[in-house]
Image (tube, rainbow over all chains, first blue to last red; front, side, top):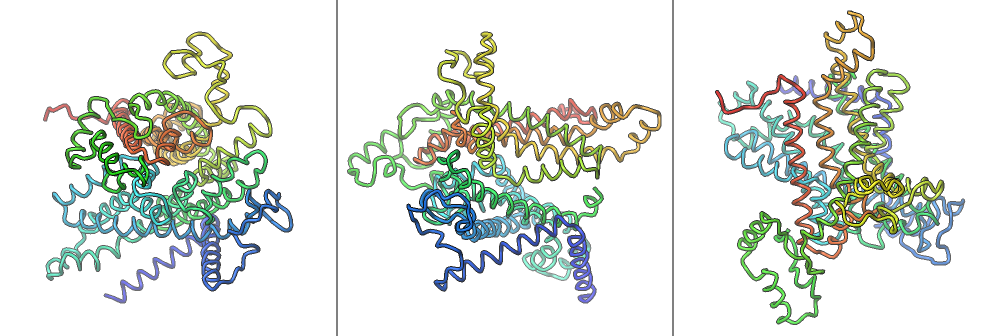
Length: 296
Length: 312
């Protein structure tokens, strides 16, 4: 029985990989995300060891070199404080990715737990949880994140928390609907009859069977989190100076929009490409897991 | 917000304010009462249209927001008109020409549209159309000398109603870039949804029947396919209108558009909580109202949808 389940799972994974492999857009998305992750990790660990592998120190100011247009020495040019934009864009990868992943981890874990509890137990508890989720959903996510930030104060940790909290209902809804459908299966009834505890049934039998839609949502969720991080940074609520964050870089370039447009082109491109990569992979994963959408 | 937030008296009066001064301010603002009492007082006042006083300007929040609301609504309405018209047109075209280069180009553009930060799109449009081609202004609602006196606050309507076409076109020029920017994301979502919904319908038997009985492609698409694909499209357009009001926060900041979005950012940066609470409440109400309108539109669009009237 265990062997057959494991074989089914590996066959499903093989199917999914084949589907992504044959989808060029999803493959590009996956490749770009792997590149971003490697870049972020290399930059983070080398900085931890005190080594700078970037062409310039991303936070070092040099007013003599302010507003140098893109050239061989500074590929993306320099900003108003003479900092190398290429180095700052690369350095910003680790912030944007880590905020995106951490925010999704918060919303995914809390949302899935709440949705699973609601879907499994049903009744008043389900009603209470889901109506609370509806209340959160009634406020557009970015506005709610901004309101949280206004209340909690500025900073990267608070941005992660704000973006994570506002996305909880999406995961709770998906998890709940999946749990309700999985709960009707005979093997769940069998687990109940054999005396398994509710927690064990949810963790061992239900959660492994509802991972697919949640993984797809999480992939797309990271793209939304990266956009929201940039938006909060743009409004001056995210990471604080002098650290490089793409949204914050765009906000500081606004005053030089006509005199030095290159200062805002590259951070914006970095956000767009990152979000695009997660969207492409998310769409590819959805197609791989939902044959109906693949036919389109 | 009050649960998470630090004591507003320190934010407003500064860290060096005397205890007497802080206590007097807290009493004046009603912050010395228990939080539940404050909440009940606040909600009672809100139901009477009173959102309290701004911590910083001491002016009524309701008046401040009412003065700025027409600008935001005007922008959002223009944006949804652009998003729905362009999105539906290209969505239908993409579905009809499935797997052609038009479909590929439309879907790629839509995907880039949902991946691009709205504030970056705005700045790129400013560089191209204001900085390079000098076609439109980069900020504001209308030239100062052309501003209509009195009226509704909706400049396009006000200028048109008094027949001042020069001012109307000036206001339209000012609104063009912010409206296109705000419409960008929604346009992409509507295009994707329209294509998907149209493809579902185009595979139905009654479409094959309509084609078999010799109807022209325009009649098949317009009369049979599009009308039946309309429900999900109306849903997404309605929901997007609700989201546009929150998207306005970023767009208005980029274009210095004097609406509630830009104003709320100002207030967020100086922790003016009564204003932030009011904006969140108003946007959430509009969002919920749009959901309700969409639900009611279902019955108008699809005779099969009927809402309970209390009869068994």
